[in-house]
Length: 410
Ligand SMILES: Cc1cc2nc3c(=O)[nH]c(=O)nc-3n(C[C@H](O)[C@H](O)[C@H](O)COP(=O)(O)OP(=O)(O)OC[C@H]3O[C@@H](n4cnc5c(N)ncnc54)[C@H](O)[C@@H]3O)c2cc1C
Ligand code: SF4
Ligand code: SF4
Image (tube, helix red, strand yellow):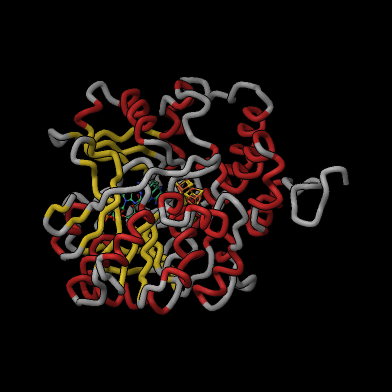
């Protein structure tokens, strides 16, 4: 279906697989390409980082262990902020500028399903004005890369892709064989995703009138922000979220064990985690610099800040995770303490870069413990060395059989 500047070619059926976020490759003419492309099969981050950015992570630049190779990290906002954007709209504005400048023929990204604003639907955008319809975050995953073949068939040779990490990994793994003349990759971080159906269950626990929620974000000040169609805004401290009422399989294993929170293979990552209320840019290579340059004076930039210490928060997280993995109930905070901690955490907890480092470490611990419990045989191929390095300070080390070249029986 085509609607002006947005094109939605029909999709082939997906080939069902375990540990799959339906990035779209199984819907291509060669579904066997999943074996070469998939983040969940045998990822090679160091190899792809070297190919895409010219080098792997540099041990002399400690933040690269957490966030992947980058030239510059920045706190950023777009002025004026764009209506409907998740934050200020840097992501969609970069793509819009590429189309305005004639640097690409099309942008591959997600628009909201006309029937359900929270459901992502892959689209090819061929005119700058189409990008406004794609602003904002949807919850769930959808087969973005299924539109690579239709893009080529439509004659698009220069393409920009906006994607979450599991989509960007597959795109980079296949980039050389796709044969585009020019490819710009704008990435956002992603974590704790689930299907759109499951997300609707979560919304129903947060609001009496879930159908009127127009915006949701897990902010770096430990609150979830909800906005409603009538203009109301509600901020709920993380500690008061009804997480214990969610089913155990609310988050699929893919999203509990995903190893690339910061989208390390994008040319530029546009997130918010280290932004302390603003956005957070990781400019990873020359093409990323070009994308930032396209925004010119519209982009306000500053150095990212950092405060607090993450180790205590990460250790507490690990203790809870281990209890849950051992079948014990999560340790709940007494109700009287929740508002106190809800007030204290944004003031004394890790903030800025330290918050982002804490989240990456928590994610590494989750990867190891969830895979160890549910699919231990997959650990040796699925867990890259950087994840073990992030988990090591918390006493989580590979057991025999969990790293390549080792056997479970020692
Ligand atoms: C499921 C999910 C979890 C995230 N978690 C984090 C996080 O923990 N930390 C963090 O710093 N950032 C996270 N992000 C990114 C963050 O929400 C913002 O998208 C990002 O900061 C860009 O803001 P913006 O105003 O520049 O985006 P906008 O200009 O509003 O553009 C957003 C872009 O994201 C695309 N998009 C929206 N939903 C999806 C989706 N489901 N799948 C693929 N593409 C989509 C849109 O099509 C659009 O191109 C997450 C994003 C998603 C989709
Ligand atoms: S490459 Fe994509 S479609 Fe194929 S198995 Fe992996 S996530 Fe699923
Ligand atoms: S959390 Fe990871 S696996 Fe899940 S949708 Fe996001 S990038 Fe993909």
